[in-house]
Image 1: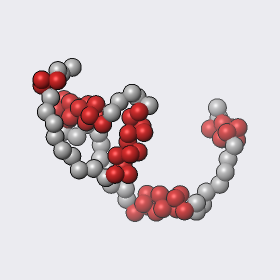
Image 2 (image 1 turned 120 degrees about the vertical axis):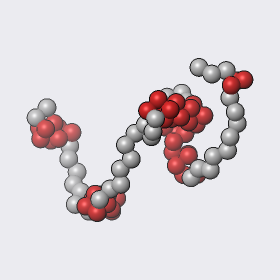
Image 3 (image 1 turned 60 degrees about the vertical axis):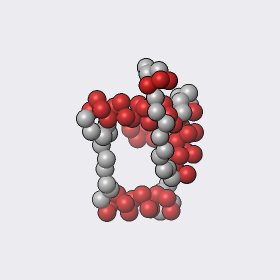
Length: 88
């Protein structure tokens, strides 16, 4: 862990909506944005690159996302039916 003397303040421009949603997620881990950025940067150094795979969806995936958001081809299923379907 670094001490306060080893830290520096910096400015980052963020999308407001994404920042707010991320803060809600991080709150469940007892973390703030600074903690998350420090973890991201530490992993970037450790991995010598982005520490996760960045994927760009193909046209079929984009259409499936659009359909799901619009409720197209969606049906409700109970937990019990889902368990039966997957054999659980």
